[in-house]
Length: 246
Picture 1 (cartoon, helix red, strand yellow):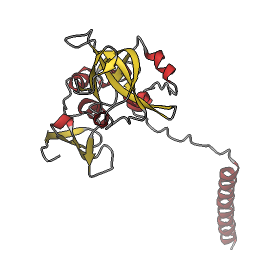
Picture 2 (cartoon, rainbow, N blue to C red; picture 1 turned 180 degrees about the horizontal axis):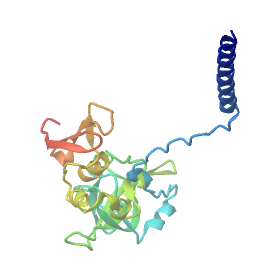
Picture 3 (cartoon, rainbow, N blue to C red; picture 1 turned 45 degrees about the vertical axis):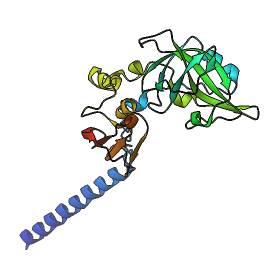
């Protein structure tokens, strides 16, 4: 009997100790200082970290801030430019279309009534506003041209310079693209591995796609009448081809 009592008492003590340990653990868990895990930072693409200047002009006098400066085309393959004679824009015949990352040296500004044929991208208003420029890297770097950048309507000006131009050299802004990609952009062609922003600067902004899933779709770029269909997977070119069905 004595041995039975001792065994029972021993078992009871083991049970009591186990309960005590469990209660102690629960108490410590409930009273321990909470550790707040810092949320994981969203990874931002290098392209989205690039700072693009905006001038937000509202008056014709604001255009003078560009005189003597160099700008680069952001709105590739959208705007025609025209010859200039005596500070008068010669709208009769386009001198060409400005391409992505093309370099312009700004010389002046003019206001002029524009024919309807010159108001496809930039409205004519009462008078269209054009910047005068030269092409430093062309065969004739002294020849002056004009490109529409805004208009005046009932005394109020609207300008699109912030949408048309880079005010800093995009080769420096996006230097992380590397020499191979920049060579393709400057030659206005596509290579595998390029992302949508790079291809858009290379081939132009005039394009169409059946999907809105940026970076995972096929986009057909007009490419000045020589359409190119480009397939992106995870925002990288995986294939491209001429597409005459644009």
